[in-house]
Amino acid sequence: MIDMAQIDAVEDWLIGEALRSAKVPDLFGEMCVRLRTCDVPVDRASLAWSALHPLIEGEMAYWQAGEDVLHEQYPHQEEEPETWRNSPMRAVLVNRDEMLRRRLDGANADHDYPICAELAEDGYTDYLVLATAFELPALADLQGNTGILVSWATKTPGGFTDDALFAIRYIQKRLALAARANLEAQITRTIAQTYLGGFAGQRVLSGQIRHGDGETIEAVIFYSDMRDSTAIAEDLGPDRYLTWLNTYFEVSAGAVLQHGGEILDFIGDAVLAVFPIDARGLGAAVRKAVKATDEARRRMKELNASVQQGRRLRAGIALSVGKVMFGNIGIAERLTFSVIGQTVHAAARIEALTKHAGTDILMTEDVAACIPDKAVFVDTFSLTGFATKQPLYTLADPA
Image (tube, rainbow, N blue to C red; front, side, top):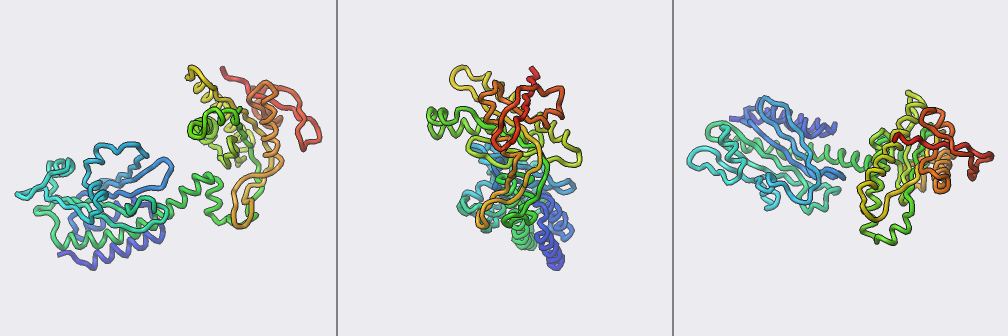
């Protein structure tokens, strides 16, 4: 006989975890351990849920008695993997069932799914999948498939008793509440990071959401603009041009992320990124920005070398350094988190000069001073908004 007072204690613990937005896999693993101390004979369990993420479609947590919980993430795919197509968890999801149960031993054994045969061979006697649906507005397009799926298995002779089934059903609803609270927080962080970037997103989530909120920081500005975009867009048409544009962003913005930069905005076919100057100093920020520039150039060359015929991808890149205002701009009802200031203006104007300077990369003297072995003087140029001509440098090609 299962003591429901002990189950109530697990419920109280789950509520506490929901209030502090504990990570779902950790929460799930600890909950399974606590259920075993309440004499609920769970020997194996898995939890599945949908994700709102540009790279990840779904996630799962796997737990087995005596082992740490295992967390796996599954990328978006055109076709479902065969293991998932043959899964009882998928069957419950597709059929909108609340429960699927399979006896794994004795005369009533049912091994109609591969996992059932595998579990029976490993000594499991009973297996069930329970679905608990909940509303999550961010995942509304999943047409009712929001919620959690949990599989439960035991090695106890005779399988789960009625008391154990009652306890599992009871606790899974409380697990769903805790998971929902965590997933909402996770979705919020994902959206902030995806659309604002980690640096800006964290500030917004920390409360910098009012018009004018921000700070003055010193940073290296990375500004990249694709060449001949108007002609390419007209030549390719909307669908093919979007593919081309995203390829360019993988080359340029991807290099920025690889080397620790923060992408602040995609301005048409331009990339505005920042490398904040922290306690490690100006030199460290410049070196990261230069590595990103070198990487973007390498990726572009590699991509163009693979093209037998047709257009080559070209872009201009500018680096400048100085103080910028980093914060909310716009109107109170519609804000964006970005950088403004003379340093940003300089980067945009310097990039425009690459079209006439005979090089695709230009940087200010302050940036070049940090990399004397890599910077090559180009010429002095007049920049709109600057009283005197500015010496500009390019980046030596490692090749």
